[in-house]
Structures are given as structure tokens and as C-alpha cells.
Image (cartoon, rainbow, N blue to C red; front, side):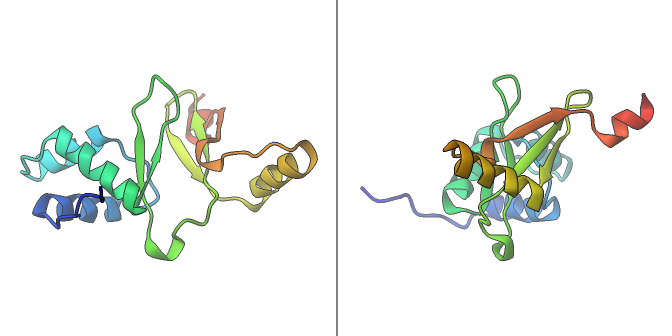
Length: 139
């Protein structure tokens, strides 16, 4: 039993083109569908989800499931930054925005947990909760 072939459909190319324009952002399937429909596309939610999952399997996208109450987020992974292996996140408890964090200090936390506590942290599933700068400014 092999893997399914990756057909280069027009919808897949449209989806990939869009994800490249929002590189570094966490996008839900609903976000993609809303964008595509504004562009006049008739792509369905099931098709978007299926294509996104295939791209996750191919290593083109990263998928993040933050909690049971939030939809899964996807992020385009450009070839040059391909799988650096660390991807921490911060989630604003006020506005719900999810921020990607690439920080040497946080990598030190991961290393410390492993070296001193024997705990292997999964940086792709690590989320720090708090209040973002924008929400603090409006408080």
C-alpha cells in the first residue's frame, strides 16, 4: 500500500499560492475558504482540509492544534526554513491571536528541561498564554 499520488490541481495550486502570501501566519481552513470565496473560487471546505492535510504530510505545511476549543491552524513552511525543529507559540487570552515564536532563549528552556529534568518538550505543541502587546495597549 503506497501513498496517494499528489495531483497538481488548480485548486491545490491556488491554495498553495495563498498560503505563501500569508507565510509566518497561522491560518485556519475557514480563513482559507473565506479568502477563496472572495476570489470567486468554489473550492469546498472538505477539499481545503484534505489538501492542507496532504501538504502537512508532504512537509509543506505545519499543523497546530492548540486546544479542544480552537480550530486547527496551518502554517506554510518555506523550503529555506524547512523543519528547523523548533516552533514555540504564544496565544493572547484576550483576542485569541496565535503568535509564532523563534527564540534562542526558548530553545534554552527546551534544552534545560531535557538535560536537567529528563523531559523532552514538544516545541510544536508548546503554547504560552498571556496578553499580547496590542491588547495591553488598549487596556
